[in-house]
Image (cartoon, rainbow, N blue to C red; front, side, top):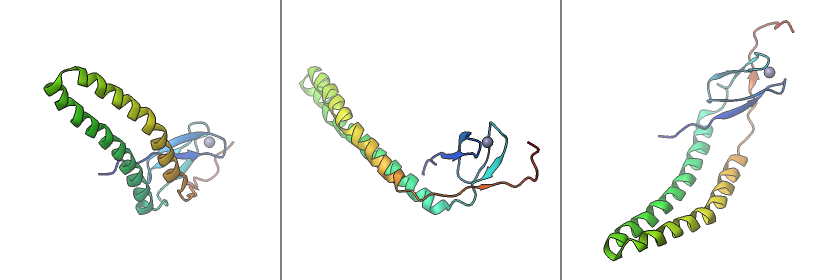
Length: 125
Ligand SMILES: [Zn+2]
């Protein structure tokens, strides 16, 4: 199960908004609508799942640390939990920026999709 990423659509008038791929987005500033159905779903899903996998790896790291320190705390004393919390904090600060870089690299490798403006005839400016 892949959680879809929101797409960011930028309107000609400068309005921006997020939209799920395949949905129609209407600009909150000027009311123009844009179709996103042209975006290749497979390609998009591949990118979304790679981002999710990268985040899952980070979560797995947390889970491993917790799985080591929680039982140890029961066996050897609650001080171990404090050590565990410190290790988690170190992991978070060490891994967080790398995680952000990885996600940015994956998303930065996205092809640019052109979203077609939905033609509804004259809008009467
Ligand atoms: Zn607009």
